[in-house]
Length: 145
Image 1 (tube, rainbow, N blue to C red):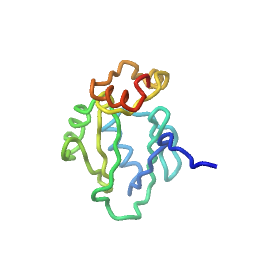
Image 2 (cartoon, rainbow, N blue to C red):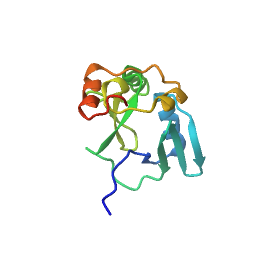
Image 3 (cartoon, helix red, strand yellow):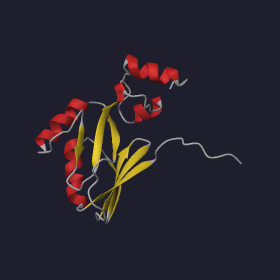
Image 4 (cartoon, helix red, strand yellow):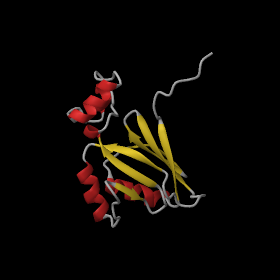
């Protein structure tokens, strides 16, 4: 039997000290729906993926480790960060109050894609890719994706 191939990321889990405060902050930065909520967990819907927030930070803040969130409008996130009193770093990266490092990338600029029916269900069916992103996709044989 061969090795399993990676097919995507279902979710990313972040530890936060205060779940309600985290939902409030992320709600000021992003327009989202809750997929579900438990006493110490909340699940932010991202179409066919989700971001899990877990109350109870047990590790030191991250310094370099990060993950990227794809958005339809990076400038809107940059503006929301400033309004929330969080200084954006570099191209567009920020550290939340619990030490989670997040990089923001715009859908059109990266080779990440969502199926048309998922985009439609998320109300994002009009998003377009830049020429550079299309070239990256074509290079990998994913131009129709």
